[in-house]
Amino acid sequence: MSRQIRILIVDDEESFVRSLSFALRTEGMDVTGVHSGEDAFLAVRKQQFDIILLDLRLPGADGMEVLASIQKLDISIPVIMISAHGDTRAAVQAVKNGAADYLSKPFELDELIHTIKTTLDQSQVALELDYHRRRDAVPANGLIGDCAAMSALRTTIDRVAQSSASRILLLGESGTGKALVARAIHSQSPRQDRAFVEVNCAALPEQLIESELFGAEKGSYTGAHQKRTGLVRLADSGTLFLDEIGELPLALQAKFLHFLENGDYRPVGAERSASADVRVIAATNRDLAEQVRLGQFREDLFYRLNVITIDIPALRARGEDILSLVSHFADRQAQAEGCRPIEFDSETQGILRTHPWRGNVRELKNLIERLTILYPGKTISADVLPGEFHQTDDPHYSDGTNRLSNAAHPQLQDRLDVTERHIVQDALEQADGHKGRAAEILGISRHALKRRLQRLGLQ
Image (tube, rainbow, N blue to C red; front, side):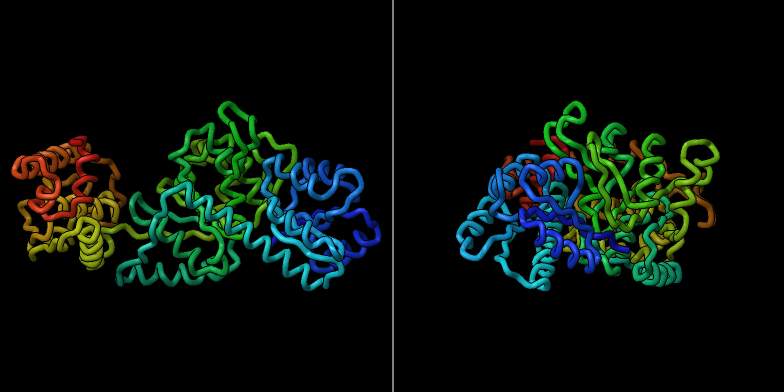
């Protein structure tokens, strides 16, 4: 259920404030009315509002001064100016000074409601654009594969996306594509036109997670040089995806549980609470029930999240989907490198189908990227695959029904880096250091070579 729109009306005509407040409350809005600029300033400091209706002509501090004071508070509340007949020029000037819009008295209630909703939509879009400018966009490539497990997953996503479920838990091994499933749920839901905000709980320092989620006031902690808008606010009316929820610090779990239960939260250092209507999708590769038993995860939070759960299949259980994914990633990587896609002979395809894929889709994607860089446009034979693809006595491998170790292989990564570095250096020597000719020798674009040089430290 969407929360009420919170409106502050600032007008010195008490009868106007009373009648307008009554009309807006009948439309389901939460309305506060004040009659002076000073009272408006105090109200904004004590309470959170979604929008302010501000009269231009006020006793004491006029509307322009109140607008300027609100902007100095560094809070992003859109302001609609209300002007009397003949004050249109001043209202236009107020818009130039930062007001979102203006209305001239007298106005119809329908016109006001339309202006309020349009202004709120524009404000939310601005917040979302700012958020996406501050982080790299992650493309959604769709769920690839037609095996029984993936067909069942698609059916579940369709049902859950359209449902009223506001708390969803995704379970799966590392690298299975939990973020992709979360984006699929959002894109098929009624919230699809709102923000999809993602945060990895394991990637943030413990002391910053709270301010990242809930926001923080300027000066609320060391290094808080400006007001921070929390991800919960950015996700209002949309979807908040919390990856690695098992890494959420115990101290913050109680606050997050409070938010899940009633939608209220308090930014760090703030005097007033805020609220947001957010669908929360959490994901983990951990056994949360075991973490509860060990005292590392709150039991009440676990049961609050564990209402709608979706299990994401491991790659080794997806049969012929593996080759479909190979083709998909080969095409995409070839486009990025500016070469023809790599292909695989029949023997190598058989090896790929039966490999245990401890790192799941992420491991497969990384393999295709490496092979495309090292052998652009070539047909890959089994002898050029990394060593672990030739092991038949892998202690982690079973019949595909057990969970496998997600341990990384730093030795393999180092060997691949060394091999790639030698190949790039040889090409540069053949080209007498000319990057364009070296890129031609390697069969990749100049831009792709530049990225390889930066990553390998060969600038």
